Structures are given as C-alpha cells and as structure tokens.
Length: 518
Image (cartoon, rainbow, N blue to C red; front, top):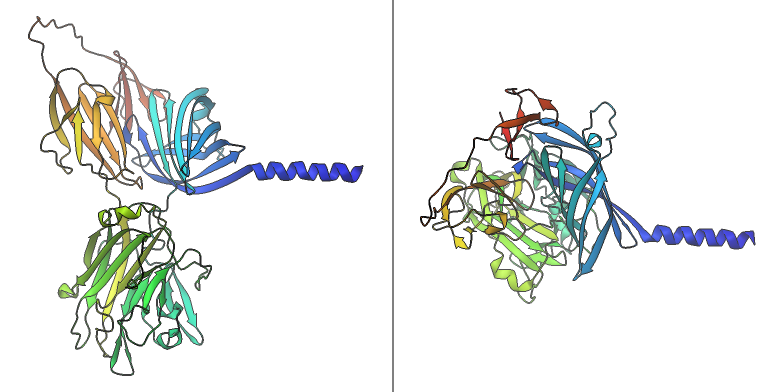
C-alpha cells in the first residue's frame, strides 16, 4: 500500500511539473513616463505558463530618467488569460495588483506605498519571443512599459572578446560568435586552415568605446594563388580548388549541433527585422590587386540551411531579406562607416519569420581575385558591426485627413480640423509593422512617439492642432486660467511650489498633468 501511495505522489508531482513551464528571458525595456521616453534598459522578465494561464514577473524594476532612478519594485501579474492561434499566443488582462518591494532592502521602493494598482497587460509570444506592454498608473504618473525579448543584435559585434580556433596542429585567434578558416569545414578544410587570416588589432575606428578590432587578411597559396580573408557569423566550407566554385561558401544551419572553440554554435540568432546594417571598415588592397573592392553580405533567414554564395541549382525560399555590397573601396585607407539597407520587398513572397542572420565579410569581392603577395596582402580592419532599427514613420492622418507633404525626418506639423481630436483620430502609417506608436494630447498639442522594434530608438512627432471656429454662432470665452494644484518629484513625493528638481510633475486644476525635465 505504501508503494502505491508513493507512486501516486510521484505521478502527481510529475504531472504538476509537466504542466508548469518557467522561462527567464533577457528583454529590452522601453519605458514611458507620462508619454515621455525614459532611459531604455535591459532586464530579465520571467514568464510562467501553468495549465493555460500565464504569470509575468519583472523583478527589481527601477525606472531611470536621464540617469535619475525611481525604484518601483517587483511587478507580478498572475492568472493572465491566453489564446493561441496560428502559432501566436496572445496574453491580455486588466486587474488590480500590488507591487512588492525589490530584493535590495537599502532601496526605498515606491510601488508598495500605492496599494492595489489597476494595470493593463497585453502581449504576444511567437516562436518563444515575448512582446508585451504594461500600463501602470503610478500616483500622479502614468508608466507604460514595453517589453521585447527578441534577439536584435549579433553577439560580440564590437569584437572585444576572442577565443582560440584550432584545426589539427594549427591555431589562430577568432572573435567570439564570428568564424574564419581555422574553424572551417569541407573536404579542403585542412588545406585552408594552414594559414592565419584573423588577428586581434588595437587599430579601432574613431569614436568607439572598444579597444579591439579584427584584422582580416588574405594569404598567398603556393606563391601564386590568392586566398581571400573571410569572416562570417556562420561557418566557412572549403569544398573546391576553384575559388569561384560555390562549394566554397559560408553557411548556417540551426539544426547543426557543432560548436566553435568557445562553445558557441555556428549561427547568429536574429529575430527582428532590421532596416539596415552599419559596420566600420579600413581597407588596404595589397600588391597587384586587380580587384580592389571588399565585400559585405548579410542574409536574414528562417534558420534552416542557407549558403552564401548560393548554389545556382538550389532555390532558397528561406530568405527574409538581404543587405549587400561588393563595391567597398579603400578611399585613402581610412576608417569608413558602411551603411547598407536590407531589401525585404524582393523576398516578401517567401513569408519568412527571421530566426538567423548570416554575415560574410571578405577582403575581396572576387573569389580568389585579391593580392597574391605574402609580404603585402589585402588587409581589412573591421569594427563595431550593428543592426539599425528605425523609429521614423511614413505618414500621419488626423481626423481622416493625411498631413500633406509629410517627411519622416520632419517632426513638427500644424493641422486644422473641424473638432478637437481624440487619440483614436490619429492614424500613423508605419515604416515597419513592428514599430510601436504612442499618442498623447495636451492643450491642443499631440505628441506621437514612435519606438523602433528593438526599443532603442525614439522619434517624437509634434502636431499643433487648430480647431476651426464655428462662425455661425457667437464665440463666448468661458476659459479660466488653470492653476497648479500639486507638484511632485520623480519618486512621487510632493514638492513645494517653485521647487527645482531634475524631474518635476505638476498637476493642474483642470485635471491635466505635465512633466518638466531640467
């Protein structure tokens, strides 16, 4: 009988553990304070799924505005309803919660002093990527927290961290998350791994915060054949003696379990849709280089097998976008900021959700076409690779009327409308569906804040609203000057009239609230 109860207890414990799944993810946070962006930050968000219900937790949350901290506390939202359709799980709830103190007892956590707070949570989980918004009334303040767990940048993109790559008895330094010939595969890997192509360099681009870059160089094979220096986020494959044969390529395949000398896979996860890439290059074409142009290629895929250059006999339907240039010149052999846009339109029919990015950088755009000199090879310095997510939009309409001559880079407009508009009267044409738009209106001025997908870039469009006068009746002026009724600091504490602080929130007699930042 005891054995039966033991087995029953084990079965109950097993079924309970199977029903509950806990996920901790490093997320980008964008925080709005009364509609104004606070400092962006990274924070771990915990998601617990238990029999179809979800709990989201943001521990030790501190809001920063211009570096000034406001300790909020640990925010836990439990019992969130979820619906799943077409691979997307939608989370939504409106409920009262009590914000707990954070784990640091020396902090004065403000959240617990508010008591029950009515919050609204909306989010989605797609392929494990959490995107959510959390609206929190916080005393005289309104806090909006936007969460995104998607991987949006290539790891070690500043090339500060390195490991030793080894092939048989040969070895060289390779930057973490990036790979060259010493970690290559293919039938000719042993031949190409005999030369070093990547070196740690202290020659860095102007304005960087880092201290290292990649020195990538070509090699002479047998004294008369040029082997281009190549760096990739995937893995290089050496498969043919003819340099132009596509058996020689970089590739990614997320189903592979191989790892490099640092224990990292031969692929880079990117789950966003960047608008462009930026990389800094310094290029020296070597002796007798008849093709003095370097190459940068980036291909956003679904993570299944893809090679660059492509095999002419294979159709690749797993591509979401490409950024490419094979015309990068030396331009005086100084550091250059190279910016390349991603082309999504050509690959729209593939309907691909991004999962991985294959980047390939080479000292020569022509396979085997660079310098054959061992004393004066082609050299390409590489620093600070980044993916750019824009926060500009393509248009705004107010009360059904498009703003004429709208320019994404012009942020101030004046419109005349028949009636005083509300938030829903403002419709924005996004440049990218993944952008987030927040509209606030105060004193006939609308501020439209646009956030990039990675929650790092913000653009505010200011619309001055003029309401047409109704000339059919006499206008009677019944307005009164509104007065300041209360003044608060960023921590929610009441301040005396005329007080000076980095952030001051004033509440007026008409119920409006305005934040001032010094």
